[in-house]
Length: 339
Image (tube, helix red, strand yellow):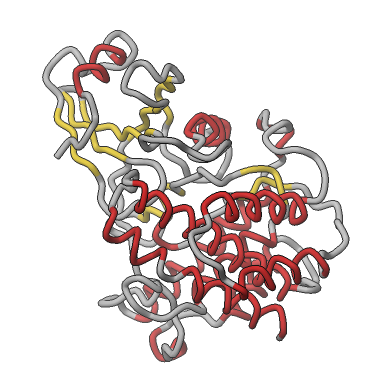
């Protein structure tokens, strides 16, 4: 299905810029995503992927497809696996919002971190590759790849806490005392800025990764919507936060799972291996970063819920189910803060 995508407008804009758009094209919308609508485009010259902003009124700086395009284009010359970028359209008049077109990467993705149906050694290898690429992202010198201005200077966690608190309040639909308490705790327990200023993905988790169909090598890291220059520990804590969630289709976590038997890594092993790859002796105040990630995800899901209520969600039913988890993330953030 094509949804609201105007294929004629896309073809007219892409003609002369990309091969294959001078003949009929077919679009299929990818399901599951709640940020930027994403389509597979099949043309006579091959297949592409189009990502665009969602329709309707949007929060300032949200759904920045131009930033997604820029960061992946900049990473093309590095060891970070990303899809090849082809063209960016910043003219909203073409299809109603900005969009970009990139290569379709023929890989496999995994929605559940329990990695059902795989052998323990395969699970181990997939997580090791996930860990390696995360350390590789944080090893990129932003200045060397033209991203020195990709994020403002200053304390990343303070900046992000302020930003997402504003986003949360702008989309708030009910009073959640736990969320208010979590925002207060983060503000009062902000660690000193240690000067680490690296490229961060912002939503690094298993379902945003594409692996080779016949192996465990990572082919592409997807969904760079939240990427910026910031503190790398937020990305690492995001992985650990996700694993603490219920092992359900919505939770996509590992809570209660016998990880050792299944060949899945413990939180500490993932952290220690990451530190070894980045030559770090350890991480102080890591629970702050865990609490911060729960807070940010709660704010993101509140925005997803608000878009569903406003009729702008990519998948309204799933958006409402995810939005119902906002109190759970806020409560989990407080629990992490108090550990």
